[in-house]
Image (tube, rainbow, N blue to C red):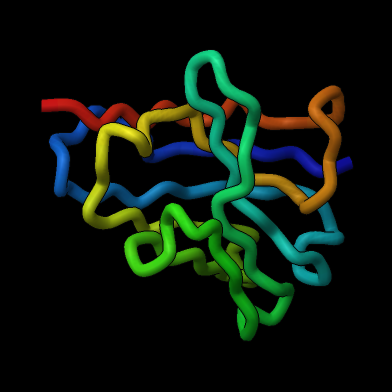
Length: 117
């Protein structure tokens, strides 16, 4: 079973940057696509970005393209999300996971990102 621990969230001003980290345990990590999701208050969890097992392929939600960058370090079992030009609408709890995990599946505790002046 995969275990996920997200970190790096903080309060940041609009236009600022943050780097989120996700520590992943489980032998399937290096063979799996990984993704970041986020859930804002009162909203459904939504897809943010994904990266292939090799790191050679990425895709992003339209709302974050050009501002966020997903990366991974398979040797360290880590996934990262570099977030630049943050806006108040980016405020949410951010989670990493394998793609396709249902809401009632296994998720980490997430990390809170708050963008506010």
